[in-house]
Length: 300
Image 1 (cartoon, rainbow, N blue to C red):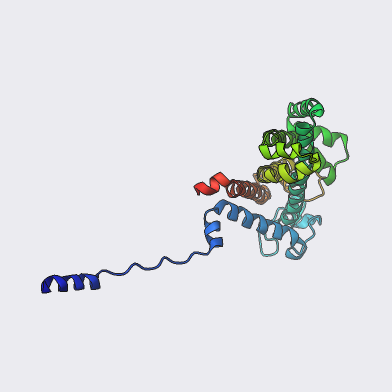
Image 2 (image 1 turned 120 degrees about the vertical axis):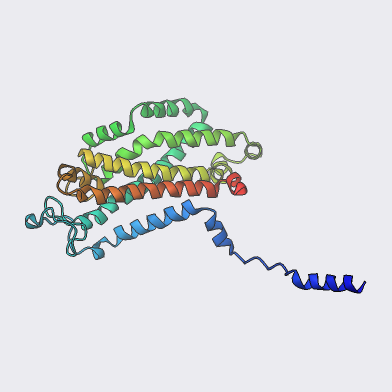
């Protein structure tokens, strides 16, 4: 008995007590599960900060030409070199980001607002459904880039025209998404109960329908913004976007394509910024989809 009790005491002394698990803050735990969202936000914030601080980061006006300093390689004086007209590439790159940011944000907001209005109109006002949806089908039958080029050819080329030309082809996709969501929500019991007690349609839309659409609409808006940035660059590259003297990534790539064999950096830096911006917006959209979808949140 003595030996048994001594062995038990020895084992008790040898076996270590379990250590407490380290405390992980809830915010860090949430961020660790959504790396794409955090990475996308950080990249977009960095690019937005560069474009906003463009007047203070560059010592050169993006439109100033210096023929004696044309096609220079990156140096301490010109961080990213100069283009064929002697303009500072770094200055034009960070100023050009303003065009892409403004176009992406404006198109996303306008597309979402108009898409929600038309989608709700088609789904809750039955007499307008056929007219609205056939109009949307007609717009979707035309390739978006061709429709944007046609609109740019009709109207005066400026930033406002570019935003309008990109927004119109993007509206049908948002309308179809809103209509499909609204038709599903319209059959829910709480919406039918609100109808039964005499609640007005605007109140039903504001209290019961729109709050349940926020998650998919926000995610779709991010993809619209990414598409708008690419379309704006394509229009500028083709010469039907913002005026050529306005610094934009599409204009820089279009002007530098004739000098690829001499100075590849003329299209390298605006191309990297364009690709990085679109990638960041898509990462943001994927991360927001994972964060806002309750089913995916429970799985994670």
